[in-house]
Image (tube, rainbow, N blue to C red):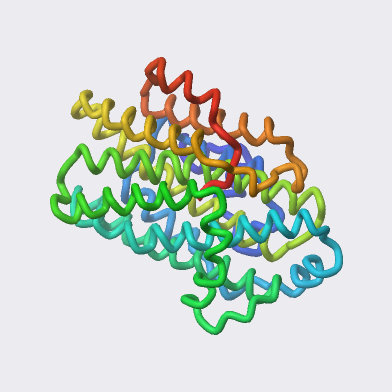
Length: 323
């Protein structure tokens, strides 16, 4: 399905400018992320979409957000949003600095696209940094200082640290041999498929739903739904990479399975009690089922079935934060 064939709400999600995104519902944007997966876009098609959809992070206005944060939100809501914003700021930064080794290999079309994603990740870091400084009130004098100040939120539960360490390790392997398809597939599974396409997307749905239902944090909502639209390109790039690799060499499915086996084990073994989705209006089970649903939608796209041991482990997947 091409962009012009999408239903009106999904076409708007892909076409409106930054200010228009404030009126896009999170459910429509999530469907936009999954639109066209039956015909995954090419790498240059995704690059062309980036040129049309890029946005200026400095156009966001957090004036109302600051009022909402200090005057309208409760302690539990602020605590959940504080952890989420800190974790995602670190998550975006982690990819900003670990994506380059993937760019060293692959086709020229893949490399051209990946340059756009690195710019996206940098923009997202600034988005979360601005929200924390201008709305919450952190007095960070630099991005480095903002990241240091959010370290406590970053290590809550530990899952992000383990996932980013795994990503960094795969990045080191790719730096030594950028064309190693086993490590390219593992990297794509860890980041594009799981971290962005399953975990982060699920948490974005929760955060956006909270902002819209509670009518708070309009600047954050606009920036996060713009970020979610960016993620649609990232996720579809990763799914295209996995799809192409697996169809060229079906034995690479084993690398997808091994990466998912590790990720699901990390998630199930680490305490995620520090983040409470119920503070933002979702039950833990609703959040968990959102994770599972997003996982299977990606698996269907690349034509991969899970072995029994991973299927069983999914029963222990927790609804913690994404990136």
